[in-house]
Length: 392
Image (tube, rainbow, N blue to C red; front, side, top):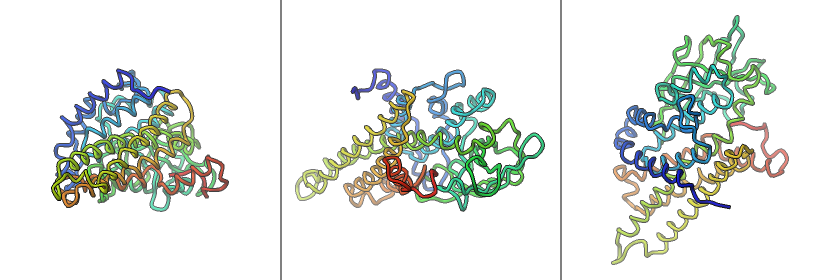
């Protein structure tokens, strides 16, 4: 097995890191404090091609294969200090764009993908509801037939990118309340449609530069041409993206883990106490050794999923493990970095406490890790380990 990157992947990684360091995240402390979306940095990402990395060139993208896309996202997470911006990019790609790539008609792809790649449209996924998140079959947002189209009624919450999004990939019920998978359908809903109400923005502990909000559909008219896949295929549309969301969204976490490791090594070597560098104390050196172990385990799992997707193979087991290991690994590494930096790790000016706040969301979004462990247990043969079936 060859674990080396190709010359092209190494060159791309270097280019992405240089771009991210030079162009992105310089005002992250201000944006984090204000909870504001860094639109200028978003535009820079679009101009560099970030928003179209996995999209075919015919639709305005870069056409990167899955593994190379992961390498690029890892480099973005390593070079960019604004984890919220990177999270917004990932929500755009794996909450919206991937659904168009997998299920969109040629007309839908031509209508939306070029603008999504150019950043003039921002994508989001409208899935979670006040009483339904992991319980996908418990969704109550309804899409009622109205002539040749539909009318949507319902409320979606915790929608990342929601307050700034232009396109929502929305799951709604086209059958009765509750019940079978085939009563759910997926729709492309644009923010300018009548009855789309961006209710209000939600304040968060971390990832504050990714706006999150509540979106209501008050009789929103949606043409039949905006149905993503066939009617009743919504469950399949959303679950088909699970491998991508659970792994590709966390590629940037691996880059952040490496960045925090390097920051901690510099601190361990430069900070002196009792006449020697603090790295000479086992309490510090062992903490850093664990950071390196977590990084390499995370990267190996991540690249395994990328390789499987590049080869067109299933990767649900591997993606589920990657989500758990990488998200929890970043939390542990951010906590370790805070401890290595001592009081400086607790100060807002140093940025370490922001890294920790940002990391804490990982075990929750894209399916809580408690649910992921149940799914993983079922995948390895434990019967009924996850009550209620697949969900996020």
